[in-house]
Image 1 (cartoon, one colour):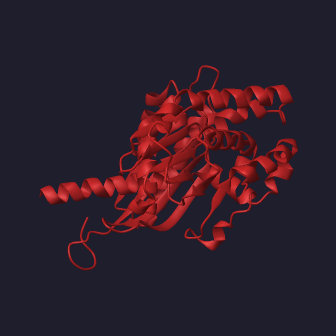
Image 2 (spheres, rainbow, N blue to C red):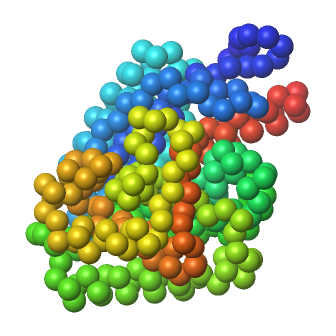
Amino acid sequence: MSPRGGGNVAIMRLGVLDIGSNTGHLLVVDAHGGAAPLPAYSFKQPLRLAEHLDETGAVSQHGIEALTGFVREALHVAEEKGCSEILGFATSAVRDANNTDDVLASVADRTGVSIDVLSGEDEARLTFLAVRRWFGWSAGRLAVFDIGGGSLEIASGRDEAPDVAQSLPLGAARLAKVFIGGAPDEETLRRLRRQIRADIARDAGHLIRAGAPDKAVATSKTFRSLARICGAAPSAEGPLRHRVLALDVLRERFPQMVTMSHDQLRALPGVSASRVHQIVPGALVAEACMDIFDLPALEICPWALREGVILDRLDRLSVLQTAE
């Protein structure tokens, strides 16, 4: 790594390899301490690892092959784009599998890429870091919610490290298994709603006791899609556009969403074909978060876990350079 540009600022081209429960995503960024990471290229593929767990809770051979193929292609892309370092991490689907070590060893043996598994708490902490850096100190106490494929992360605090960092097994892909075969009947939907709310409420006191947040924020594709369905500006208008997900609008739209076919859901703004089956369970989780924590709306942050991983890496490099 050599400095480019003026002074002692070392600009790095990083490849951030995010193995999520839904998608494998390589984000190529130019980054240095004290500046926002600048996206240079994006490569992703749907993996649906949360849905490739066998009856024993292990990632299936099909899932391992899909993951290995994606990592191999991502490595080629990273090399072509001139990345000096690859930061690889996996979240809930790999973390919760009962063959995690075998999966990662297989990928490393066949591609040479080592992937770290983030704990749920680290996932919440790094997402919180990204949100704090995006909004800054003037945002005051933050409450941050992130619905992934396998888990829901909740974090809160006034500093860059949250006071509360929780991870719950309430990801949209995990819950979508209830919807296999079509929309659930009223009783199944009520039971799922009750389960979601009970799981969130169990540890809600840790966040509630800290006091009402000055700003409540949502990150992740699920929240962005729901906000778009509820009238937020499209992504084409850029990351600086103010976007919110309002609870009253979500409640108004939800009954119709439950009755829609996959084709009808796919036609809604912001809903991708690979995640269409997850939008209704994701809406149940989003509604529960806002209701239980008495939040009329959530502001959408364009930065999330990937940016948190990058910022954390830059912070660590800065400490090392200072020590030298």
